[in-house]
Amino acid sequence: MSMPFYVSPEQQMKDKADYARKGIARGRSVVVLQYDDGILFVADNPSRALHKISEIYDRIAFAAVGKYNEFENLRLGGVRYADINGYQYDRRDVTARGLANVYAQSLGTIFTETNKPYEVELVVAEVGEDADTDQIYRLTFDGSVADEHGYVAMGGQAEAVAQSLKDGYREGSSLEDALRTAVRALEAQDSDRHLEATSLEVAVLDRNREHRLFKRLSAARIGDLLAAQDSGSGGEDAVGGTASSSGADED
Picture (tube, one colour):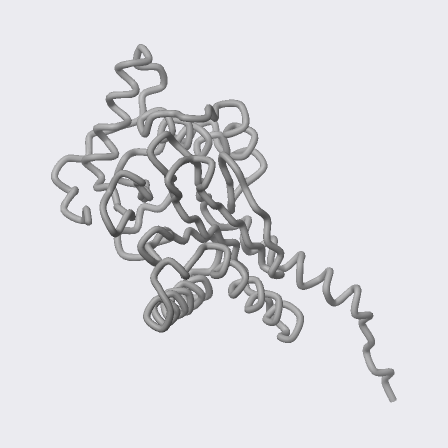
């Protein structure tokens, strides 16, 4: 008669955490960083259909790495939460902090009570009247929440990306400079990698817009921003900005 197999709760949690971390590291990276007019989101994502960056509400956006079906499930839940609270109370009552708390509870419950944790990492960001009132929250697979400032790197070789952001990030950068810093950081994972405009998903929360502050940038616009920055910096390691008319998906 075989002995029942026993795993201590500590070991079980460690195994789940290792499993989730490995899944997240297999994906492509996303970076989020503040710039002079708001918050910039840049994903290494050639897909035009499967978004890693999305609008949640008027001033709030969501970025994720990991398993698409899992973070899409969370995104939809966040949109529902925002819509219901904005409708029942007031649109100003929907905040990134409130949303981060909801996500933290969901992820914490899934991590502790199910066999398979979600292989996801999220950023929930809300643009304020100025950089000091911007809010950026990072959530990990177990429901931990961190209040971030300046920049965040998730997924892939996140440490290499974060180190590049640390070296290159400047407070109050223009959109062009912030995008260049983000792309350089995403390329830092692989010395041979050059990200074209068409393989990037880019969006902003622009505090100068009216009402809905989320805007997705077309490949043509991304290319123009990168090209402008390249010509301004002597063309060093130029990132291809040759995407032409594929810019029709701009909101």
